[in-house]
Image (cartoon, rainbow, N blue to C red; front, side, top):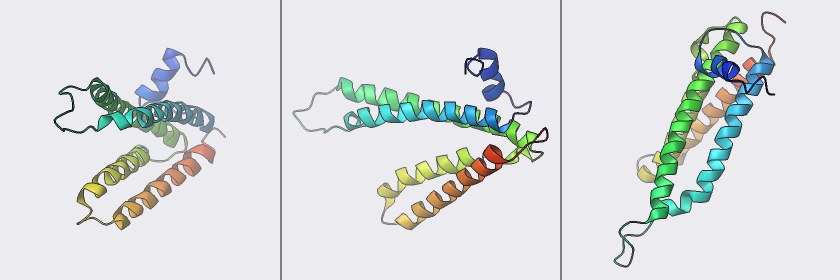
Length: 160
């Protein structure tokens, strides 16, 4: 595992589009991205209650816990964007190894970001957007994830 965490290896996997990788490297990279995002998601669930506060007359003008929550969610959003770009670079290498077009490397991050935005938007515009739209995008996102796992996680590349 130390070979995976070397600076040169991480740079190759997540910051460049050149090269090819096998299924094992793809799984390790996806696991690393998923672990980081899972840890940050757990942090958000812990701090999220502090992100909303009342504006009544007895409330303090500045609530430090609310400021911390919003700084955290801003950093979390940045981490999601970086993880999405890293996933595209990682998946592009894997698709190249499979002899496929790399244009599909961004499908899962695009679907996941669209899905997240639908879950955020729907409660705010519930009168014009039914839950059916959200469930439809959920299904498309799950299909994209299943495709990525099958295509990049289990199929043999050119060297197999």
